[in-house]
Image (cartoon, rainbow, N blue to C red):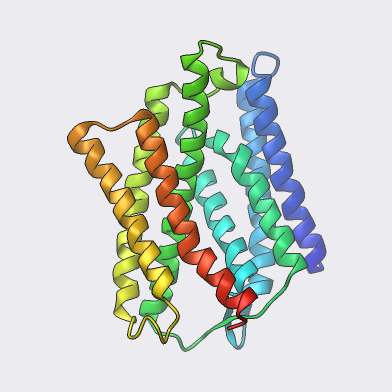
Length: 270
């Protein structure tokens, strides 16, 4: 099967899953909710399977791992979708797929449309490979936290105006949404801490390795998420403050990895 057909299968399944999730949320009184949920998750896993196949063809080669910009972007979205689907098996967070699935489909389109090369040698040290893995896992969990924060902001706004619609009623209670948000941030912060520690192990000269911006922004993101967790524990931060801190930390994380990678690879061609 050609790479275009594999990518098309992933895109179609992701978009179908998002459609079912949205239909279930906006028309929950008209259809069997559990059946739509299972169908949405099933399509999500099917999309993930095709996405895995497409990524394998794009990334793995005899020369090493091709982690060029759009490959890395697609791999990050794959990690986010995998984390979402696995977590959805025992937690009520599948509604995040309404945003996550179309974005994952978009990364598949971009990866297929703009193929590029940027190898990590197959002889790279195990600590570097561990750093990449931990970074992807941290990014995926904190991406889910950012999407959760967006849904929490929408839910809070509608409830404050006392105008809940079928979309808002399909979400878990506000306290449950908030508890899930901080659970995601806690896991993501732990993974980010480990990723930073493993990254410092092979950091020699930030300027020569072109890692200044990435390192500084990653540490700032770590401080924001750590500050949020500390504020939650000591002062009971929640609501709008938690949402703002979450999105600010996520913005720094996006700039840290994909911002610097975009500039180096697509603008400076390094």
